[in-house]
Image (cartoon, rainbow, N blue to C red):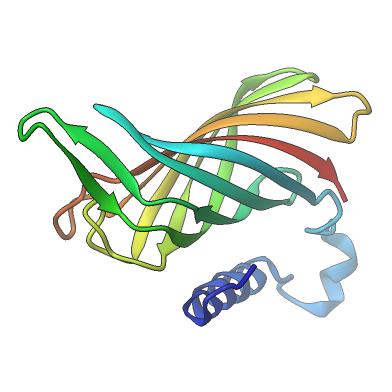
Length: 188
């Protein structure tokens, strides 16, 4: 799988920002800070794009890394197909986006749950390799709402999430990228 060079800069920027933000204030206190990577988890899955009026028919391939006991998520997403919907006003199929890559970094909060399941919300930033009819900007806000279910053995889990990337109307058009993902994860 070829990752376009345009993805390297945003991915490195997100990773460097995360590293700087989470670095201990001084080396003397580093042993007192629990390891950020201690409970890291890797997820892989599959999903699909939609919009509130219709399906948009693209397969989504997500790979995410959860860090700091599920508090942060760094994800790479491939929108594998062109996105289209049937426009009832013009009675024609309309293409809204070509296939593209996206990267997101989010902070996640648990809303409810127990030992076996968790309901969570996440918010952060995303970068996509193309501007399109869904969002006229490369950089966007990223939000997610999901449920996490523990699998046996306890180190495995399943997540079902709905996600939305949008520029909040900073530049039009701004319909937003909506997609759902089903992912299986494992503690590293």
